[in-house]
Each structure stands twice: as C-alpha cells, then as structure tokens.
Image (cartoon, rainbow, N blue to C red; front, side, top):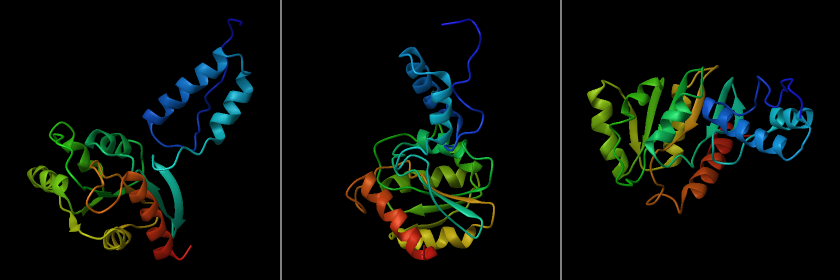
Length: 193
C-alpha cells in the first residue's frame, strides 16, 4: 500500500535454518499480498513451530535438544539441516539408497560433531565418502533404538541430536513419516518424557 517498509518476518523464529526463513518469507509475502495486516503476519511467523518431520524440535532433556527431520530423504536436505544449527549436532543419518550421488554434498557431513549411521544401501554408499574425509561414525545400526542410544551417549548439554537420514526409509520403516514417529516415540521412551 504505502512506501514505508513493514515488518512481516521477525528476526527470531522458532524454526531453525536459513532455508526455513526463506520458506516463511515466501508465505509472509503471499499473505501480505492477500491483504493480511503486516502485524498479524509477523505475529504468526514468530510463533510458527514448523511442521512434523521437517527440522521438528520435539524434546529436550539434560540441555540436549532433539530434532526430527525424517522427511529429509536426499543428501542435500541433510546439508540444509546441518547448516541450520549454530550449536554442535550429533547426526543420525543413513538408510536405503535412492540412486542419489552423495559426492556433491558429502563435505557437509563434516559439520556434524558426531555421526551415527542407520543400516541400509544408502549408508553403504555414504561410508566411503565419510572415510575419504577422515570422518568417524558409530554404527551402522539395524535398530533405531540402538542408534538413538549411541547418539544420546555422544551428545552433551548444549548439543542438538538430529535425525536427518538423507535416504529413503524402506527396509526398516513403512515410509519417512513412520520413521519420524518411531524416532520420536523411542526418544521419549529413552528420556522417560
């Protein structure tokens, strides 16, 4: 309407990551174009918790935050997830191969403080890439619960534990949403919350 700038996206958001910030900005601009007041948009964006299975913060215990990014089914999504955190990340990753090349983003895995691998054909493709970079890992584990226990043992107060597989879920789970739900259930059970 006028020429004065309007605040539609606050500096602090509940969802982490520059890519999530861009997503919310796009939504905010569309809402403003539809005539929604800037103040209402900014308030909604500031309180938006994100959506399930996409960098979903769902638990905290002992100063460790737990995130479910099970919808991350390609390695580029793991890269975006790791770039979303300024705190150290214990990464749970891997699974079934989708015939995707890990080479373009394999360096992103070095951003993780520690890596815990789930079994799968995609993990088999990823391990040589990690080895080439001198990156260590735990696993691969054939059980989500065992991987979670390993990640919990590596995490310290101030860290984030992130499930961001970068692979398909088949073999161990029905689909990525089943994987995410089972991840959250197992974490809550481990943490007794």
